[in-house]
Image 1 (cartoon, helix red, strand yellow):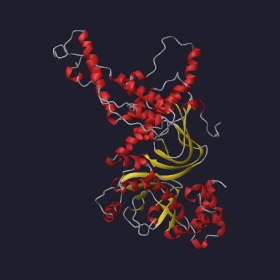
Image 2: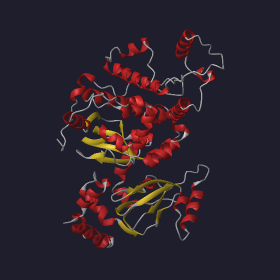
Image 3: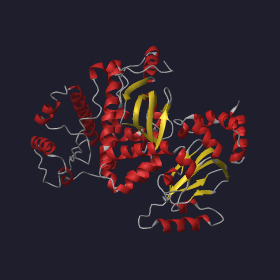
Image 4: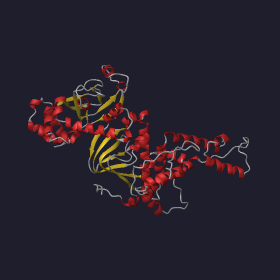
Length: 517
């Protein structure tokens, strides 16, 4: 039976009253419901049949308001066909009653103006459920407004049917999300209200073996928290230049030293073919297990599309956070520590990527990945380097000269080297009339710090766990690169418990066989 015929059969059953729905008709639709919505995956067939027999059915038009923020909820919805969008008003001073009045005033107008319903949060299509939060407790207030984006068919489950059918499943899922937020060190220190908003924003899904949750080059829409299972991360470096044209041009302008130097000899057609073939190669970067984050680099850096591929190599439970929810929750003052920790973890991850690429394909080079290291260190670093490069360009063109006051910003080591050089040249730096000094190459300083950070990461990763702490006690932690202008460096601590692979076996990382093998 085709999906279209199956759906018509479903509508013919749901359009009847509960008393007129035959038992055999409901049983025939059980498999369809289980495949359509993850809500029914873990339910017994007889419970799903009971839901089909007693659920309600509604058909909404575009811009119809299904749920209003601030009202008391008594039902949940499952989308059979169509799509809905969720909006949230985040005014902390307003009470739920005042928010409800505001939403009601907007909905009473002839033409719905969605911008007055709050910030856009999420859109859900076929098989997605919403409204369940209000059923977890009696007289629970709706926390968001839901609007139909097109003609939408919905299954409606009231409180009585919810309590005897899907309550255990949803409560277990909600409790799992609460435990994840409360116990994850990334979210320590968040206000209770913000933790609740994050819990509501996270959507739990089960990913099957062999499926892709991220495709390289696809638009950046979500980041994922892996609860259990295993995910293989791969990427093709040759696509970076076409994926991120603007960022690549900026890298060429700011850090040209990252780009591989040409060998200087004319390539033969055979050599050119071999080089291009080696460049277009998908490399396995790592295998990720429970409590890892996937797709965060593209979201945190605001990349337009995904950096890598993420394929499920063992059935996994994941929590999905949309990019809109990330922007809404993480770009706050209370989340700055979380962002710093997250950036540090992602930096360690990219160091692993660079090491894998350099180990397997040294000829290709990893300029773009190294540039991402620079972007992850500090939000102000890129802007500061832009200003510095602009100043250096103006000096080269004769539009601007560098004064002695600017050279005083260099660190003590550079200042000593400069003083010695001036002494050999018999130049007095305090003579302002002759104190036009050449600019120190800022981009090379940044590149050196990137390379030093990579070497430090490799050394720590190769160290034995028994003497790792001793090494860190005896030697100061190496600095990771954070550029704040000439001579201004910011020390960043390194997480010791994140991504310490066995580099001796880096050439032969094992994974489960996949359908593509």
